[in-house]
Length: 396
Image (tube, rainbow, N blue to C red; front, side):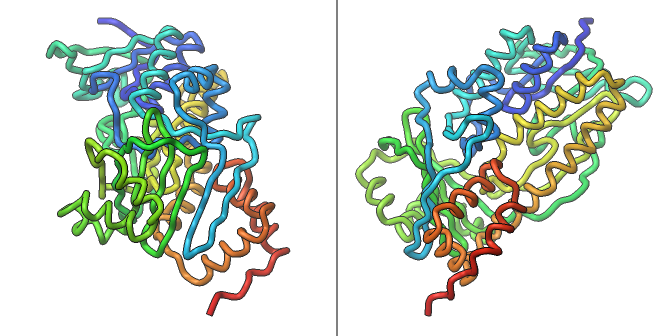
């Protein structure tokens, strides 16, 4: 029976990133995923600037650019005839975002982890955790050939998503939760990519578009209560939503080949779990899952991988380091979690429109607004700047 320092369950952004960083520390890492790679997964694709900076820090940003993923240099945000266009401040020198296809990004991360010394097994399903005296000491998994094997490690990291089996079997407590707020549908269209992430907001609706590898992803968000209707005729509702709220984009879609597949979900859970315990830790969606409307999933995964790797490398005994990781993650996740819940309400009233008019008239405020959204500036700085600019009166 082989032994590892760390077994990482799940080889997407959080898991592959964690395996990469821990392997670079000289740890013996086994990385497992039930999918046969490369393979896409449900995702907004968008990487916020802290995530782009992490890829640069890891030496992987040039590799991502080499895949042909187009740069997104600005954001265009529209509502009720108001358009706010701008870009964020840089994060560690990075001011351009990307929205790569997941079969491209995840494979790039896995390849980097393997190059760092991690062992990767895809098409491998983890069936249970192994315990010794109350602590997790490994996994029992079924290989691609159908054989069940047991693998031991000092630490098992669950990077296996919102429905994490590691979290469930380790008994990870849900610390806070909220019901689903929105549902989302998206498709990949054969359209020329722009250099902007575009978003069109109406009350209860958000339509977004961004260039990705060889296509443009077009996404529609609706309130959760619309999911029952949308799931009955998803493509029709999706196209109707684009037509009603972004006519220019709709005309571009009409001239393009129909997408091969429409992706969608109404299961956008919101929770923060306790992220570590004796012999186990959680990263990515397994630890914190929130509505995808703010497009923070990939960047959060990278930042959590960095936090776990840095904490484990601190020289502190493992159990103490894991407790510190769990406490820190809970603290740093709370603000983004609450902001995402607010955004997922999809509210657009008079106050929100007055706010957008202010941003349209003050480019410096717009830059700060986009900087907060990207993680390049603190919300407190933006609130302080707003106090110097009274909101314009609502129209009518």
